[in-house]
Length: 75
Image (tube, rainbow, N blue to C red; front, side, top):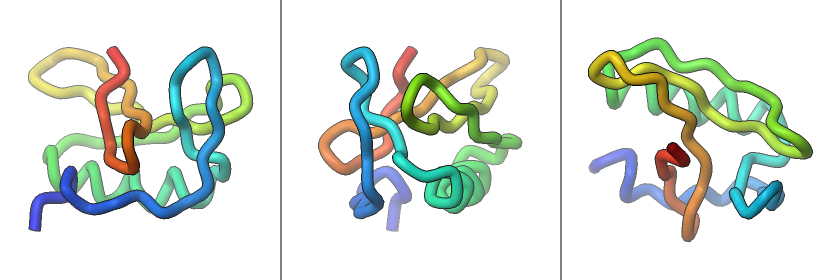
């Protein structure tokens, strides 16, 4: 099953119009899953009141949040 089709049931917060993970632990869990899916190191970063996933895809730095209970690139 594609990781991007799996619902994110963890608590979320909205910061500057972006839905982010509320807790660092949940973000770290999804960062590991995303890293395996895109075959790239993925870390977590505090953005305002929430946590986002950060990785590099095809040489481009990406920040991942949540949209409609799915992972989504924010930039």
